[in-house]
Length: 444
View (cartoon, helix red, strand yellow):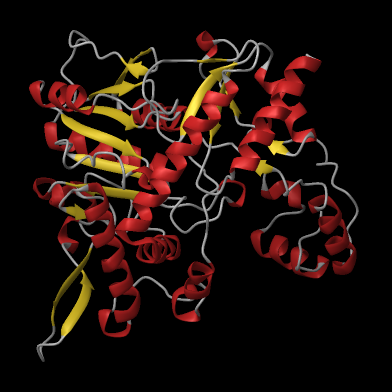
């Protein structure tokens, strides 16, 4: 075995210093049943130019020209050039954790503006400086609720993103928290008030994974009647149109922030939005940037409420996260500033109108039906007269990323396909998608 960049002589000196005879001796303490037997069957080494050519050839196999109608948390919204122009400035790209405010005012102010926008966007009093992604934010919402209520049960809507529910289940199993899932009936959550042990949190998505608009009042009232916190996963691009979680009385809002200033990028990196009522500020996970005045009376920014932070009071903290997605959060702030309130409303309205137009066209096709009658936003689910996975493959041959098959996570819904339409889709593209799906169905 050879180590790179270590030479054989380097390896021998290490072994001699440790009193070992071979590399195998170095790993002898590891049980054999967890070691990989034999070699890894790796290809021969390549020169840099050869490796570059290989990677280029592999990348060329990707089809990046497909017109995107897939959503499920990652969406093809318009990304203005100003976002990349500003976020690629070296002051942001190379910045480190702003523990020293005297040398970090620019980044701190940018994060403060981001927090202010997220707070206004969600209608809640305080927001943090971001989390890793939407699923991480969901875990932190549960974390916060468990710590605040001293309970260990969560009522979770089946309309929450399936991947988020999987992450919640993994976290809950490690922490001894019980997850009680509430089913979807005709696209919306059917909450059972007799679900057993009192919950720490009632968690739902608005709109939910199928695109349906949930009954905010029913979920929030249920949570508060049971002494729980109402935690809502929101879609930031529809908050210019739909009711904010704060106005509905929710305690916590979290979101996948990818549509705000971040490209799809094969699913990451992304950014988690998180906001809460002021009553919960001492339990807010991650970083918070505050605005104050310095000794000379000038406006200044600094990370604040540090005594609640995990890296200072770990044994008393309700969360283990001490970091954030600074660059992605700044990109979200740039996008929101570029849009403004009117622009955000326009994006939401155009996306919703186009989704409804597409849905009305698709149900005219033979064997295609909406999966539910609940009102929906810019994403909706249809039942196809064929395997949706096969339909997606066939649609790709016609130039479309058709949507997300629902059979894996919602097998009871039959041949379900989740379809999204953003403001980027033109009427010609919506009609062409319909025609292509008609041909795919006809071909069987």
